[in-house]
Amino acid sequence: MALIVKPEMAWRRARAIASDVSLYNEKKIIEGIKNDDLFERLRDELHEGRDLYRDSVDPDLYERTNYFDRAVIDIIVRSKGHVESKIW
Image 1 (cartoon, rainbow, N blue to C red):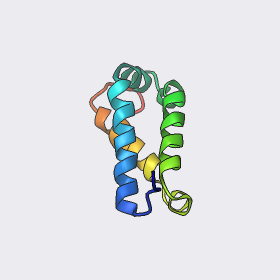
Image 2: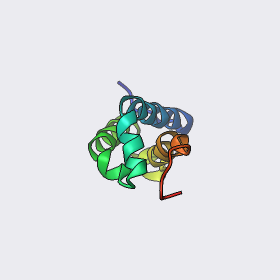
Image 3: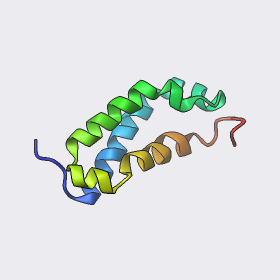
Image 4: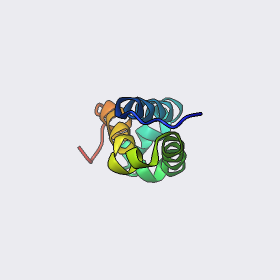
């Protein structure tokens, strides 16, 4: 498979991966937000997602952007703003 070189396609890829992490780890995400340990709870899933993203995107584009991190915040964290937490 060819590497993604267009920024808009890389952004879509990052969001798709973050969406999958969110979809398959709903309970972990809610508990992580409630207990302020979200990133520790999702360490393995986010590591796997980042690797998948990095392996599908041109290395130069990967180094110049933070699309995966932004997608994690937009899709996983921001979408759970309704969850009661001491962090917000």
